[in-house]
Amino acid sequence: MSAEAYKQFLSGLVQTQLPPQGQNWLEKQLNQIKSEKEFYLAFSMAPRFTGKKQLILTEEELQQATQLREGFNPNNWTVDQVARTLLVLAIPHQTPEQFIAILNKIFSTADLGELTALYAALPLLPYQELHVKRAAEGVRTTMTQVFDAIALNNPYPHDYLPEEAWNQMVLKSVFNVRPLYQIYGLDARRNETLARIAIDYAHERWSANRTLTPELWRLVAPFINGNNLADVQRLLKSSEQIQLHAAALALTESNLPEAQHILAQYPEIVKGIQEGKITWNLIGKQSYS
Amino acid sequence: MLFIDPHVHMTSRTTDDYEAMRKAGVVAMIEPAFWMGQPRTEAGTFKDYYSHLIGFERFRASQFGIKHYCTIGLNSKEANNEPLAEEVMELLPLFVMKEGVVGIGEIGYDDQTAAEDKYYRLQLELAKEVNLPVQIHTPHRDKKTGTIRSMEVALEHGLDPALVIVDHNNEETVKEVLDRGFWAAFTIYPHTKMGNERMTEIVRQYGHERIMINSAADWGISDPLAVPKTAQLMLERGISEESVHMVTYQNALAAFGQSGQMQESDWLEVTPIDQSQKFSGNSILRGGQTPRVDTGENKNESNIIR
Image (cartoon, rainbow over the protein chains, first blue to last red):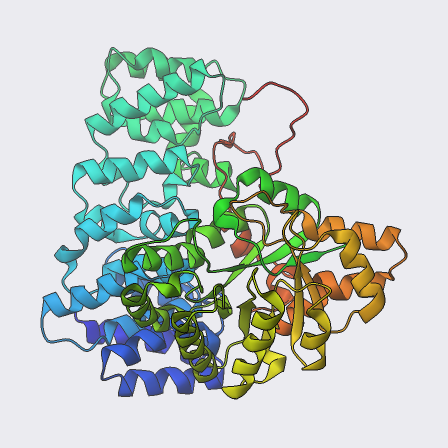
């Protein structure tokens, strides 16, 4: 999909949501940015004109978003973020190298809001395959808001991060209590290494008498084996229902015959799972609501 | 009472300080760009430092429920390395229009050399160009002359005194500053600058107009609670609550608010989005448990660390 289509969609989104002054300013910038300097100034100053209100989206608009770019979800975006993304899509350049050079410059001088906007915009930027290192670098941030912009509701990591970097992102989400259910494409990119590290992490938490997010077992589910079955069973002894649900859900994804035997002892929960009343997304939502 | 500390170098402070400041009522702070205790030798370290002020330090403060702003500038000490200063001057336009940058600062004189004068003047011109307030550092040595000179040069460059905050004043400089229509800031810093008993008497004598106090807490022996402590002392010594409010909150807001980048609503009306941006660190949520909004408060009543 071309940058033009993204621009059109994003412009449409903010048309009614920007104050008239912001709308005029943005239009003017998009039409007249000719030099790098003009772009840097406009990029920094955007919130002064646009405000920073939360974007309000209809169900239809959200669907359009993901039709335009699979997994693109601006549900948590703010209006200044949209404006900044539009500005980045309008960066004057001739070659991919030029675009990356300008992008590197704004990344290296960015404030909190700018970093958030830039990372969330990754899936819409031209030359998608050239941003892999940038995304992996972003995952190393300690600023939650910036981390969330990459890790949550953003299809770029699913589409482009190599396994090592992807695993770091998911594990860091667990470690920093970020909602795993908001990671785009999580199930599709589960892997054995990730499951092993998740189990090790569970042991560490248990040794320290610390709590553990029930979402963790979503990572383990397809890789339940003779070695880690006991860990999943441990959850079934929990006094918290949500932990039981997580264990049962994990077991339903397992091909291990023992898993099915264990599940047979929990007919009520199995029924809930079959009826779609117990799902990973619901467990996630319940954990962070 | 709520307080603003309009000059504090949080980069050099620990989370204990953030915690104590928020607990004492500090809701907003301004971190002027300054030097790091020893001279930097590369422009790149300035770039990363400025990025740090508008990025990580802003985030760090938000974890404790404090709104962090900054002023951006080339400090006077490091202006003496001219080749470096030239490169740093080229960086400034990349940062001065960023969100939450409430002024050009802290700039001015230290040794009062020709190089300091050159970059002070260039930055006054920059402030005029982008219409931002200026936060002036006045020298420790030959202070009175240096303070007056800072103001004369600002006037020579056509700056409006209402947009200029002259910092680190004392009994000897305050009158000159107020008479010329500038804002007079006072740094409560043990041993070298002001003590807060003296500060109390200054407010008694000069009133509360265009006066503000700060801690300038940094990597030296300093006190990040200087503003709330001084407020308390002033109240105890019979300064009116209104005056205390003016010199520990309102005047700083009025002066730096002229940047258009600092409004009371920034900390009085914290939106749900901001809450979700706070870092929950190592407090793993149990299933179904309501997330606590972490203000970073850590109850230290026992020796047990979990």
